[in-house]
Image (cartoon, rainbow, N blue to C red):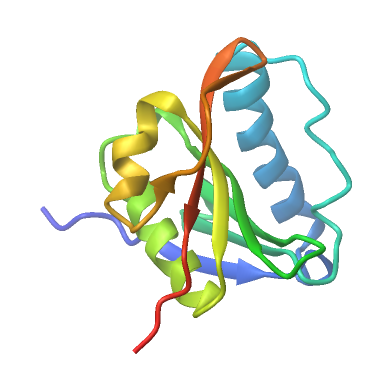
Length: 151
């Protein structure tokens, strides 16, 4: 039996349909706030920045995985809010999104704050640990960076 088609989507905030925005935020809140029990300001104002890009994988009109690319004030790309719906985990969706995000980032330096248990996952995409472990909402994290790819 063929696998269902999972479509990649990329958009700026201003290009998101209202229903899509709702579904993306619901996925983020369902996983980060509810599943991981992190009470934090999910809506941090950065989703609406003109340079922010929202990437998601969609199946039957619903997002199954998501991440966003921000541009920090110094021009460095920042990947964040990497999330996969519980029912879609283990199918390589986070890796597919990360590879696409890095293609969009191009030759810029890129940083992220990884949950510590995911450091090896991000290392497969060229990220290295760039600081001490810290707790964020009770979950251990490590800052990571990926230097510009040249050549």
